[in-house]
Image 1 (cartoon, rainbow, N blue to C red):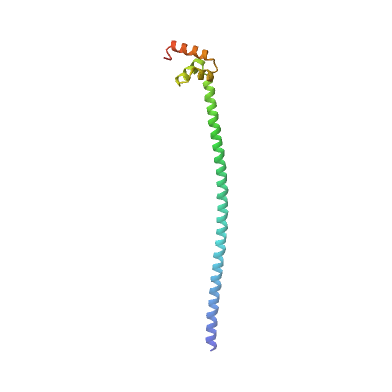
Image 2 (image 1 turned 180 degrees about the vertical axis):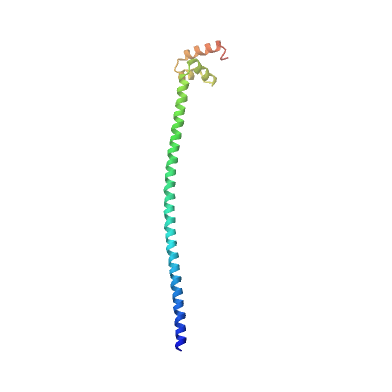
Length: 127
């Protein structure tokens, strides 16, 4: 009977040790999962911050593109204004603008525009 009791005790001790090992293994897994979860949260926060930074950079790029377009239009306008008056009158007339519209655009009187158009016709540049 003592031997049977000793065998049962050994079996219980072995089961207890196995259970303790299993508990340790499970606790280790829990710690790893917690660590992974914390890492995932940190990664999510980093991605969120970088996304906000990209949005801000994208807004800045759009603003700069708008400024570039505006400056480009201004440059073209200045280039147009630097052309000699007869060239400007010719270009505007070919676009179909009236004498008064050309006068307003070029900064001449209507008779001044008529004078330039007559000279352009004499040169054969307008019909």
